[in-house]
Each structure stands twice: as C-alpha cells, then as structure tokens.
Amino acid sequence: MLWRLTLLTLGVACAGARAQAPELQNGLIGLSTAHGAGTPGTTDKVVLENMRVTFRRVVSFGAGRFGWSSAESIYNVTYRFDPATLHLAPETYTLVSGSGGTGGGTGGGCANLSVQVVSSLQGSAAPIAGATIAIQSRTAQTDATGVASVTGLPPGQSLLTISANGFGTITQAAQLSCDAPNELAVALSPGAGTAGGLAPGEFRVVLTWGRDPADLDSHLTGPEAGSTSRFHVYYANRDAGTCGLDVDDTLSYGPETVTCPRTGSTGAAVVPGAYRYSVHHYYGTGNIGTSGAIVRLEQGDGSTQYFFPPASGWAGNNLWSVFELTVPSTGSTSVATLNTISNVASESNIESVPNGAALRSARAAAQQPFSVDFGSSRLAGSGQNNLLVENVRVTQGGQEVGYNVVFRLDPLTLHLVPEVISQSAGVGASNCAAVNVIVYNTATGTTARIPGATVTIGSRSLVTGATGVAGFSGATEGAASVLVTAPGYASATQSASLSCTGTNAVEVGLSSGR
Image (cartoon, rainbow, N blue to C red; front, top):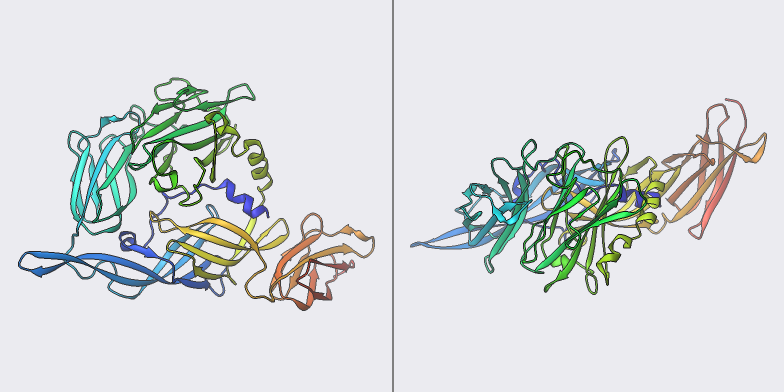
C-alpha cells in the first residue's frame, strides 16, 4: 500500500503546461458518460472516449433580438501519466462530433462578470488600478477601485488571465451564470525583484474565496529555529517563527496571505522542517466546499501550485488541511497534498489534525521508487467531474498491487487529479488472486532468499526485492505457470493452483548454473 502513501508527497500542481485543447477550457465538461481503456503496447497512456463538452453561444433572432443556445461536442482525449504529480495529463484530443468551441453563434452571451484585483499583501486596502483582465477574446482594465467589468459573456466555465505591471500574472477559472451576479476576487503578488517579491527559498500562500462564508482563516504551522516546538501563524498570532500573516480578511473574498520569511524582514531565512497550511471556517453561512476557495502556493523559484477543497463531506466539519511543505537542510523543497477535512473545537488544536508526526513518518516510508502500468485499465465516468480508473497496476518494493483510482477533472489544466484510491483485485472476477513468489537457493535452503530474480506469471513479470519475494495481485484464478530466472542460476518453472481466497504462497528454488 506504499503507493497510496506516495500521494502524500505530491502537490496538486495546476500551473504546469496548458492542455492542447484550449477551447475545451471554455466549455462545460461532463464525464458522466465517458469511458475508455489503457493504450495497447504502452504502460503510461489511456484513451478517454465520449468526453462531452457543452458550449453556449449567442444567437440572433433578428430585429435586434438575441438569445443563447447550447451546442454539445464530443471529444476523445489521450492522457499520459505524469509520475512527478500522479496526474493524467492531456496529450492529444480528437473532435468526434459537433463543431467544437469555435463554430456557430455570433459570440458573446448573457453572463456579466465583475472582477476586483487587489494586492495579496494588503488586500482590499490596496486595489490595483490598470490591471488587465483577459477572458475569451475580450479584455478590460481595472479602474481606480481595482474593478473591471466584462458583459455579454457566454455562460459556463471560462479561463481568465490577470496581469498588472510589477505583479505576477495568474490564470484562474470562473463558472459564469446568467441567473446570478458573477463576482470574482483576485489577489496579485509582487513580481520577483520588486518590493515584496519572493527570493529563492521563500514562499507565500494566498487564499481567496467567494461571498460565503464571510470569514475563512489561514493557519500555518511550522518549525521553531533551534527547538522541537512549532509556531502557529493566524489572525491572533500574526508573526511567529520566521513567517507572518500579511492580511486578514473578515468580510468575504479575501485575500488571506502568509509569507515566509515575513514580508519586509531582512536577513531572515526559512527554517528547515515541515510547514502545514490549513483553512478554518471561522464564521458565516455555507462551508469551505461551497465557498469557491482557491489556495495558491507561490515559491521563490517561480513555481505556483493551486489547491481546491473537496466539494462534499462538510457536515459537522470546519477545517481543510491543504498541504504540507517540507524544507530540507539541503536539496529541493517538496510539497505534500493533504486535502483532508475535519472538525476542530479550538483553533489551537489545528497543528494536531491530522497528526503531523504520524503523517511525516508515513510519508517517509513511502519514499520508494515505483512504476505504474495502465495497460489493462478500464475507464468509466463517475459523475460530472469524476472518472473511475480500474486496475491500475503499481509495482513498488518488489510488490505489485492493483488499484482503483477516482480522478477529479481540474478545470484549469484539464488534468485528471487522483482523489480516492482503493486496492482492487483487477478487472474481471477471475483476476482476483494474490500471490507471493518466494525465490531461494536450493543449496542452502528456503531461508537463503535470492533478491533480484525475475518472476513471470502469464504476461506479467516482477523482480524480487531484498527479501527474495515478488508479490502479485490481480492474478488469474486457477492453474498458473511460474517462471523464475536470476543471474548465476539455472531458470526454474513451477506449476501452481491460484485461489482468490487469501494470499497464495509459491516457493521456487534455483540451483547454481546457467
């Protein structure tokens, strides 16, 4: 089960390469009827068929009268597995039916958008005038209050790019409606080399959300220099450790911003150790899952990562544990996605939910190389934005395990991001056998295990680990032939009868020779 723990070491990196299907990002994507499979002859690709994308366009009825219509297109998309993030990233797409995002209509629509752009370091007290908002093929400039309005947009999902002189540029998704006001708050951070800009080794976390709940709070805990204690930065303790809360918002939208080292400090450095960031629902109607919250992690190397809360499971829960960032004494910083929800009666308990020491210990145990094989996987839509991928074969530490993974579609990048992972027996009722093949030296007995031996059952091969064991899951029930080879030993073949009840143990002895 180590691969499940490996997920804790990876951030939801939504600021990478854009998908090669820009028009898809301006439509409403549905996966409920999607299906697909692994690509024959490859281990890292899957083909998703029947991705339905709805585009809304304005239609002229003459005499100055306009309305809008919906047009659906269907795409097949090839995804490639990215081992660095565990995402399925779109590689190519094919329009199967419909006109796509470029055909028909007169352009425009019935949705109106208002965007306020402010400084991430000062919030609404420092609106940014002259910022450029780009959406679809339209642009607008913010006024002296930092507000820009764009009218006549098609309803549905759209991407915005927000830029301003002296500030970093960001891209953000917005879901537009014709039936309600569309209001978006955007916080830009100073660019590198400007006052307040990040230097290498520094990081900043920016939280924005919608109208409700009125008050979400940022919480960052981290290591105290020269101590085993941990500091806690939040509204009641704005400066702690080497970090500081730049702005605390209590009236909706945000931002709430934490910077390490604190903005304006000189000569300070980020202390090595683990930093945990969480969001707490302090007061107001609704919950974090419906708030439209976006957490943006900016690092001094220029990288940016986005995090989005789970949509469900919030009954009785008020805390979103977002990520943990680990700063080593030497080497590169790593980011672990937590994305868990829980309830805290007191904000002073936030550091222990979830238990930080246990989490770090589990993640350390997961630091083993692994390989992933989608060759026998099956794909099926699981709701509007979720995709179930069955029988993902993962080999780690000489053990092969099958997993079923629910991926969530990220609208910003079109990446499929793993959210729920469960161990499986594979696709089909007969692929349910678990097998441990134990390889030993016949000259010295079964306790003299042979690491590095290649074990083959059917079309699948594994290499024994340090204990001389190769573990298969999802093997076919019934009679099987087990072939074992190893350098310096004569190969051996052994018959076995595999059952889906319990774990099958097969011992194979090798004799010296070629």
